[in-house]
Every structure is written in structure tokens, then in C-alpha cells.
Length: 71
Image (cartoon, rainbow, N blue to C red; front, side):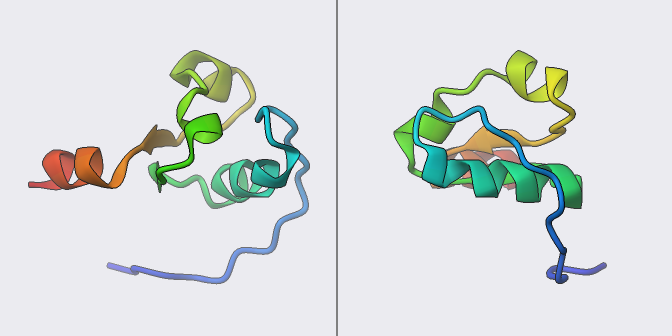
């Protein structure tokens, strides 16, 4: 099982209230990431419906939520 890999980002996603966060969303889309673990309120405010509508399969969760999910 791979835990890390280099993913080139060629997709531009513009969904976050903070444009500096959009790169992380683009990366999630390219990597087909299951989770984006963050404490950033702008990213956490995005609904799963909006993410899926834009082809982003990731769940955006806090570190504590992530630990609960994987426990």
C-alpha cells in the first residue's frame, strides 16, 4: 500500500472562498484522494455535493474527525 506519491497538477479548480486553497482541491482531484485533512475553515465549508459535482472524490475533514474515521 502506497502512502505517498508525487502527483503533477494540470487541473485548475476554483471553488474555495480563499483562492490560495484551490491548489489543494486541484491536487485532490488529480490524485483521486479519499481525504483532505485540514483545519482550514474555507475548505471545511465546502459540501460533499459541490466537490463531487466538480469531480473531486475527497472528503474534507478535520484531523480529529480523520482519526475517528480510521480508528
